[in-house]
Length: 219
Image 1: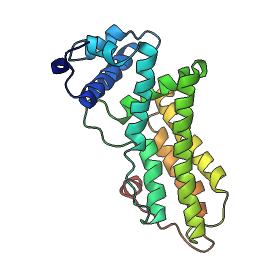
Image 2: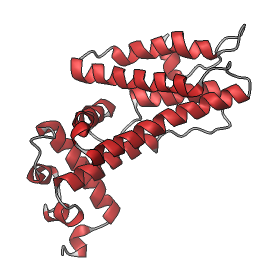
Image 3: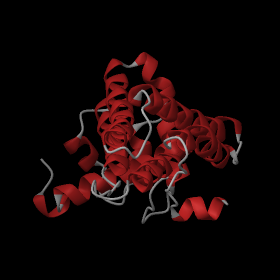
Image 4: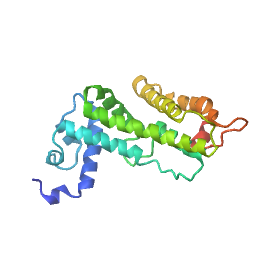
């Protein structure tokens, strides 16, 4: 058992382990990653990693939950706000990410995320975690569209199919930037979503009313 004085705050320690895991994964990749690699990036004693996690698989499962929570927990949208603005914010959040107070920005984190995503076909537990995250993203967009239709803000479309298309487009754009080095992919897909999907939600004779700061920067 590691002394309490060495463990410190449980939450702070686990966060430090997660950030060390980010650094180790970015250097070594998932396949070659060892717990000692994470320990080398960890400022406290390596024993703490073994105290909190039962091996590499257990740690990576917790790490995935940590990464996903950073995105799911950072979309602060008041449901009473303008629905165009909310839809805009949710799409931008998935494509361009939140701000992080660390050395690893959104795309550093997405590179690690997508590497682990590519391994999920061989790991049922990790696949389940990714599926939950994917479902939450799609449902959050679906709910905005459903509310817009109910309130007469959006025209009558299939909310689930529209949200499915938006979610898949976001994922494809992130993958193209990360795997193929197409840095412009997220901006390109964002403009395409605005032109071909978001604008089509406006009822006949009306124009989309959303205009986020990022949309302004794109124009």
